[in-house]
Length: 289
Image (tube, rainbow, N blue to C red; front, side):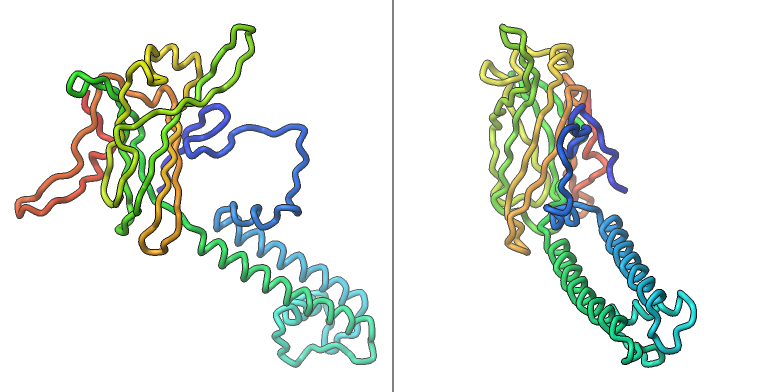
């Protein structure tokens, strides 16, 4: 089951927009490819099925009004004749009368539309199937604790696939509200340096650590100040999937209330009685205070 999304004002925890756009004209047809690719599989198939049925209903109406289809009597006959024509099936029982030029012209147009539709859907399915994806898991919370007398912010990530992500690179930044001396309010992005941001082969889990010092955007902040500044921490991971050799990326967002102070993560890697190491995801989000 997919994890429940959290909503942080303008975005959700996956970084998708969570706001209503006013004053901008939607241009679906000018960006049709992106419209289909960004839909879920259920939405994608449902929309294409709806277009398919609608097109056949329209052509079925043309045949019903024009006539000229032998052995077709009721509207359903004309509708299913349209389906046979668009799919170039041609069972042979229903066929256009050669004396009706207009009906034959409509059949020709539908055949051409069917060829274009098949090519269009084939391209969309291939593009959607071949779209590079990642399967990175993030802890639900970040923790702040003293580690060898150094104050650190930490979060964990895990590659849920059996294959490696080569040269995984983490980029962490904070987005928070800044009020200028003239009273204007704007969101600014501050880079957060990690002790290690590159993972040569990302296959298990990794704990990212950020030192909270005078160069950190967390320096001098409290839970209340982060609340007032609507702080968000952005995580972006890029790397190369070793199976497909494609560049993949993953992103996640933490809000101020996702930070646990004076806490640490529980261990997730153990050894069984035979000395075999194993990863226990039941402890992945477990926090010790």
